[in-house]
Amino acid sequence: MKKRLLAAALVIALALTTLLACSSKEKDSQTASTQKENKETSATEDTTKEEVLPESTKVILNEVAHSIFYAPMYVAIEEGYFEDEGIELELVTGFGADKTMTAVISGSADIGFMGSEASIYTYNEGANDYVVNFAQLTQRAGNFLVAREEMPDFTWDALMGTNVLGGRKGGMPEMVFEFILKQHGIDPANDVNIDQSIDFGSTAAAFAENQGDFTVEFEPGATTLEKEGKGYVVASLGTDSGYVPYTAFSAKKSYMEDHPEIIQGFTNALQKGMDYVQSHTPEEIAAIIAPQFKETDQETITTIVTRYYDQDTWKENLIFEEESFNLLQDILEEAGELSERAPYKDLVTTEFAEKAAK
Image (tube, rainbow, N blue to C red; front, side, top):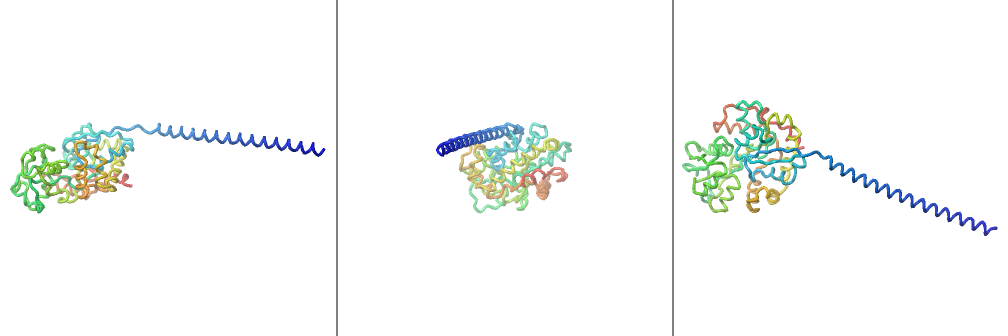
């Protein structure tokens, strides 16, 4: 009897063990299945998120010139900061502030990048839908005085009685140059012969062909003349003029009112470019922007970036301060180019730059 009871107990125990094992396997199977489903669901959600990203908005930017001087903007382009903000940027070079302003006013460009003096001229001419500056990129002049020989002890009075290849009348390069001359007691109209007949971008070639005793050059013109042994940089207009609101981004008032989200995204991308140049070496900056200057070798790009870097060319933020705007108008008045001062509150907004800097 005892043997029968023991046998029955063993059978029951074995059955329970088998039942529990099956239950555990089923539970493990259900858990694995649930985890798999969760992973698949998560993957589907991630795919869905990627699919619902907003489409890029095309923005046409007309720049006054294509120069290493504007390195933070090219960093933003090459690093994809505009794409991150949902902007498909088309970059067009205007070759002069007057041409860039015309493109913005006519609507063939959405945003212009040029000297802010152009916005003052347009405003004073009575434009209803005038151009408003929303981001200042450079805080020093970007051109250099090039001589035919090395002048380690250069002083500005060396220009007395000489021929200088200058810039367009009423443009920032020329006005800053004349501003410096006046600070050193030199009358631009009588003490120096400034040739303003040569197109922007052609002065370096003209100087290489023996026109003028000095030339005022942007980069890469100045460094190219040095490398070819046809000129030597003897002074930086950016250093000698002090802090000047040299270039800024602007758009028509109506465009900014209709597309504030585009202006903000554009400014955010630019600020990331500004942050990059503030936290990286000239060599690193040069490597990033190199695709923008395929005809210039890496060593030359690095040399130019270093020049601009050392003279504190780029601001930490994009905020266009009222003090800077007033200084700009002082320079315009001294150059005889300003009939009436324009109000800062109309021609400058800091709203977008302040948000981007946070």
